[in-house]
Image (cartoon, rainbow, N blue to C red; front, side, top):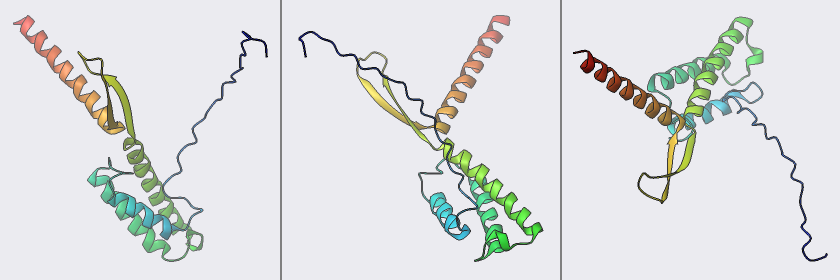
Length: 153
């Protein structure tokens, strides 16, 4: 290859589409297996760390109702009325756990500290970042409201 010849590679942009996360409870997997996994994840402090105690209780109650209805069998063997009840509980569990899983996702950012050229890594869950943003907005509004009151006095 002659000296000075510059090879240019054509980069074809690849569109990466994120596949939506699977719901915690799925009809294609045996219920008892899924229930054990959900209960284990609820006791751990990783997957659902941002779930409230009230939502945790609602999930456990729904799992209990589903377990009583399904037993060791499958939802296919249930009467139409029981299928509807199990489906509604499944939707409740999936909704709560999906939100808790999304809120519990850890996001890390590298930032330069004020007055320093050094970068540091800050890792917070999505819910923690949202809480901090809301608190900052609330503090800013309170500070602005306080200034407005002082001007009018």
